[in-house]
Image (tube, rainbow, N blue to C red; front, side, top):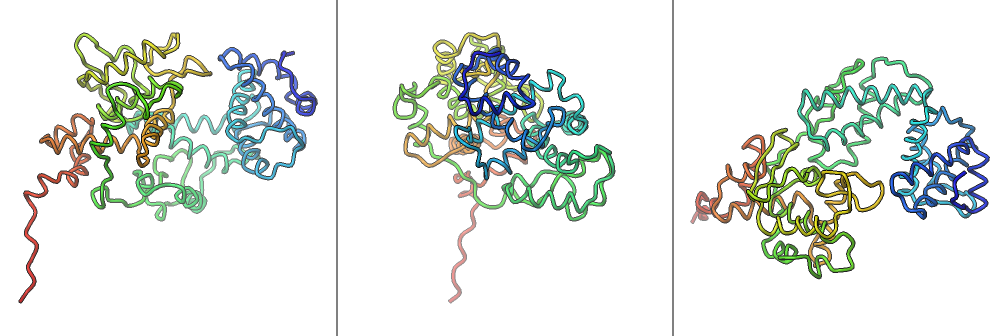
Amino acid sequence: MDTLPLHPTPAAWLDKSVLARFRSVYVRFLADRGYAPQTQRVYLSCIAHFARWLTRCRLQVAQISGMHVQRFLDEHLPRCACPSPVRRVRYELRAALRHLITVLRKAGALSGDLVSDAVETELRRFDRYMENARGLAANTRVQRTHVLRRFLEQRWSGESVELVPIDGDRLRRFLREQLQHWSPASRGVRGERAAQLPPIPHCTWRYAQPFAATNRISGTLATGSTAQDSLVCRTEPASPPFPLEIPSRFRAYAMLRCVADLGLRAQEVIDLTLDDLDWHAGIIRIGRNKSRRFSTLPLLAPTGAAIADCLRWERPATRSRYVFVRHVAPAEQPIGAGVVRRAVRDAYQRCGLPYTSVHLLRHTLASRLLASGSTLKEVADLLRHRNLDTSLIYAKVDTVRLAQVALPWPQRAP
């Protein structure tokens, strides 16, 4: 038995549930990954809440799947009337239950969950198709796999795992629900028009991706200003962008400089390893990007100094070769994309500037290069675009060259 004390009420929920025999295994799993005792106690309390729900639903361990976790979060949690003390913080519950599924799967307790196995098999096949046939980046594959997992778990609601043809109407309804939460750019992934989809046979997910017509060249392009960049990207981490009390401020500053100086995408920042840095030659290698090719960029002095400070003063002792690693449990893992986005967003907000994003800084860098006389081809090379057409969006902010080709405004007829 673990030594983590719980309040008698949630402790009773857990000890009288089907999850009781996994309590010690779960706590040991968290401890092995570097979670602090207080975090272990919070997560165990979350598992106790889930255990009470399982008992009320009369579910056995072998029946538990991601679908049941989602039902608990989406259906039970908003209407939860469980007595105090009970954990109701959604992100805590989601994280705790994600670890629980991992523990149960490693223990072989979910070996009878054929629905989960069938879904995971389909997702692995879809992921291999996206990587090998389409050459999509890892972050894109994760996003699309997440959408497909949601669809398959709805399709196979736990009663059957028979892989039968999927009706086009069912898929269209699902896509309409999803598109309500997507931006126009996100809707414009390549694929067949949902309105024209026939009944879809098994394993043809590559034809089932939603399509929405968009024109990236039309409209305006949001960019920041050089003055704003200068305010946030100072020569060293300092107040107000990165005050002393901000945790992991050296890491946040180094990530911001990688984005602002080199135009890196969030995933490219995450993928940076110690082997990508050549300090003697003053270059940095960018790989595993959308083009699936390696690119070599000059390691600018401010960028290199920021990375060096991060490695020297903040990076924890770890066997990982990634430059930017997690400072909290689970240890030995690279950061997520949300860490990069928050670092950029929070720095601008602390300066009293409007919200910005990683991609907005790429736009700002492209605009600054064009204003200084660089060509679209040079911008495309720096931003690692596979096709020069991708960089045409920046032509609309090249005010110097646009002024040279602008026609005189027609005079009003007398």
